[in-house]
Image (tube, rainbow, N blue to C red; front, top):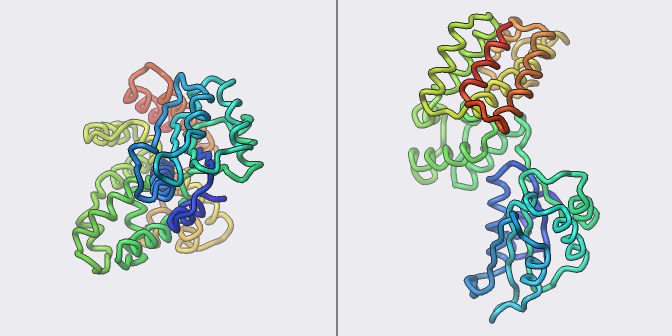
Length: 329
């Protein structure tokens, strides 16, 4: 079952006895957790029938014993274990037995951002149909997704506004959700959300700076690259987020470049790349500044820097600047 289907079921009061939610998209994961908790407790004595555990040092037996404890004056118990990947390997494997024989009077939710897909727990959950992946949507899906989210808030979101919103914030669903909330308050209850509202309410400086940075990389203008990076860092943008934005723009350029090489016109190439139509000419011009070899090197550098930013003791800004200089070669 997809995490969207899990959310839909929970919204009607149905919940599984056990669910394993794995992935980096926190907004989807948290929505699923909240929906399952509401469905399982159904407004009853939540404080007595809700348990939360963290993975580090957690034993499988603790989770299992809690899940098999009868709920107090209620129909079911809600048990949440976060960061399951931090449990000892043997303890993670020990949860598999519970997956095969869960308590019918509990809803046990196991959550992990990065549990190994080859692990026994993941394979068991997949076999039993209780594995749910919380991953960011594909870029091409985002405009439609934000339009759906706007409708859920009672607003019609124009295609131009959706494209501008996605271009400004990328695949960060939490940022998109926050922006839609601000836009809802800005336009008023039930009012349509148009492009001018997005331009007024959602800061586009970051995206403009990233495009300027990518443009400078294509021109191999190191002074502009360093100035753009310094501007983004001074505005409190985390190095990892800047790197991810650069990676996103380069992936878009690679798709535009491939589409142009296949004979598509600029507008068609932008559409295939999932880019807003009003950026078609700009993207086509920028895509022509890169060749295939440069893009391949850039993606290798980004992948290596991503790993370093997540695990190195070297300061993030220094790693980012090193990567950007490497991209200019």
